[in-house]
Length: 412
Image 1 (cartoon, rainbow, N blue to C red):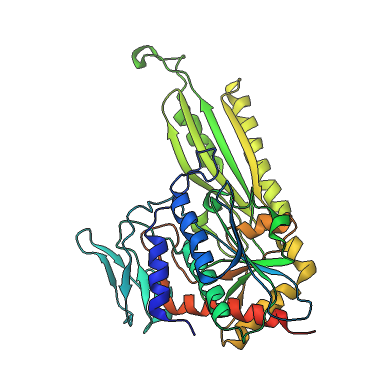
Image 2: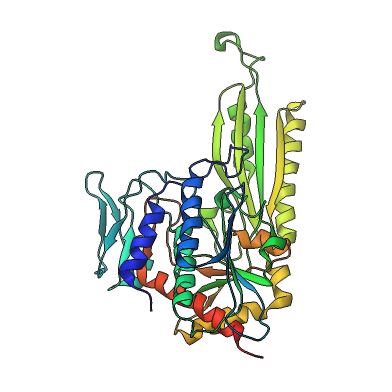
């Protein structure tokens, strides 16, 4: 259906543009460089024949593929984000094309001895004989979520060039800053005007998800007191020691490296400190709303206990909710999941219906009135140097988009 070479060329043209977002910025998009790809995408949508192409002052992009049937059809949408994670550099991405992958180690960077190995990443073995796109070991790839954007644009172009495939009105949307939890913050659901949508932001081929974590961030600030160490007895308070007490009081086995499936976690992802002040940054995740609230309470209780122990306020904790489990909003309209599942089955793809151990724009959009399950985009090992995507998975994701459009347009 879709030319492999053409898909690779389009994808590479996206990932070689640096769009890393910045959680410390208060602008939208959070980095000016995201405009480079946003403007390119707006022009590309116009060039392939999309209608009503619009890019607003915050770099949110929307466009329309008009219906080509004469009966009423729900308006559906497909959404992806163009920023990449600040967890690892996205500057100077140099994609490597591995044709007919043989199931052995892939040397990403010979100089630095960086190897993508199926002994560690056994999912690689699912793709023997296929074409993989990897990094050169010094950056992330950006398949999260430029693979999703590539698939949506390619699907729209295919539908435009093949009017024999009947479909209703389709809206597409591309967002900034999803990786820092703001992708849906300024998304105009009313303007988008879809009855429901799908984010193309999953991983392995076949993934179909309508459950995700409830999510919060926590910033813990510990105040110490600095004096000359030679005269410190009874006077110095070392904030790093108190921070260590806090860290060690969090359940050690309830961290990302020890949990899976529906198990939630506490994740310390950044710490910075000296004697006078230490700052800890956590994320809190759980699929179950009750357990999620209990995790937040653990941190509040621990803060109060340490302050009581030291006899003054040595530690403060600020917790902010980020997004919630979209299951509550999608279950009442499960036909939208069923359509995606049927599309995969008709394309001989085994649907892998599971909960996301993370979040997407769709989780927030579902609570904003746009039910939005998540579909695979094909990539693996996001946010790091070992990220890769099989081209065949991207082709299949493109076909799924087209098939969903076709199934939605069928009468009854």
